[in-house]
Image (tube, rainbow, N blue to C red; front, top):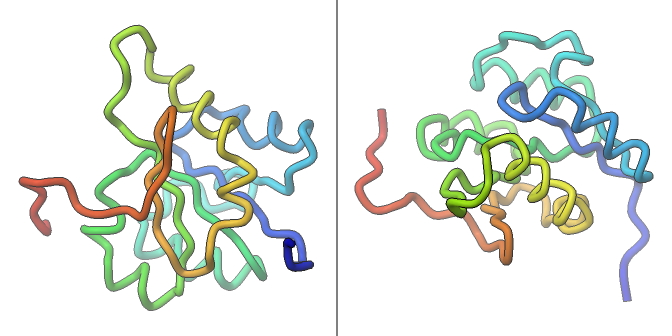
Length: 138
């Protein structure tokens, strides 16, 4: 049984294909690109509180796998819900199609992601985001 919730907005970060928000809207998802919100070029620590001020319930979809580590304080302060597209792709995929496929494949899960969590999505699975070995805080 799913709980009835207000629509959640999927926010497409600038590091993802430009038309992704439009494609998701065509598929019935409430989505918007960061650029459409007038936030083009915002740094992540600036972006998160601005999203929180403009939208009620949102998920930032990003290809920046280091964002949750490097900007952990900003993520926590904003209570941000973040969906990270796994940067490690299978050799047969080029970058934009890889990112697009993952977002389309998991948009329903991103939409239902538990608030204030960070998850990493790849082609065949998704899980809570954890820093990769060898990652260090900048």
